[in-house]
Image 1 (tube, rainbow, N blue to C red):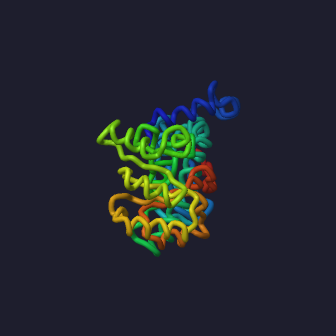
Image 2 (image 1 turned 90 degrees about the vertical axis):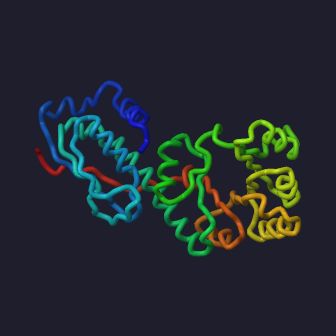
Image 3 (image 1 turned 45 degrees about the horizontal axis):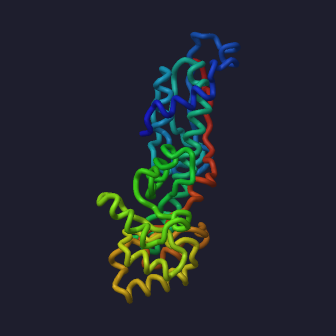
Length: 277
């Protein structure tokens, strides 16, 4: 679960000086019962985070659907009982977290299932294209994907802007000399650079914005040179729900998609007060 202190910041941002509507309208000691329900089919995520938030403010929570479970429209996800003001204070933040995480988990699960149906060894990964990394990375994991790097501190990923300043082979040499413990990945856009990166000792070669037929040529060249087994192959750029299976058919290891997090389709969840407690 995401650390509670990270989640509390969202409440503080949403109600920096309290919830004036509830404080004006709802009696202080009034208790209520509520449910959170799914308004669509998909994979639910963020349940543990919502539970932690409500419990922090003294609300009792019964979990009906757990993170990673498939849900249908109308399913009850959480049952709540406690101070009405507290429930309403947490409501929108909890729904925002669950909606975003479930949207990501649902899309990831769909793509993972499509890829695995074609090639069991290929993994689906996210990217760092998000400002909500703890939430988004956990959602990817719940959906069955790989989070990729959590931060710039996790692994070496030499990209085009690095290579605009330092030649490819030198960049890999420097990265390897920097630490024996860091994975070194290099982003390339041509067959020639893929061969150079593999020869220079890259652990992962990311083939960026290449069509399936171009990737097939790179893979064949790496095999001819005896380099394919030395590196993992990641493909990224231009991959969509419609064409992902074409990439998955290839002898690759990872497909990464920024769209998993930078273009999230929110999952529809709702909180409904069902009565006084």
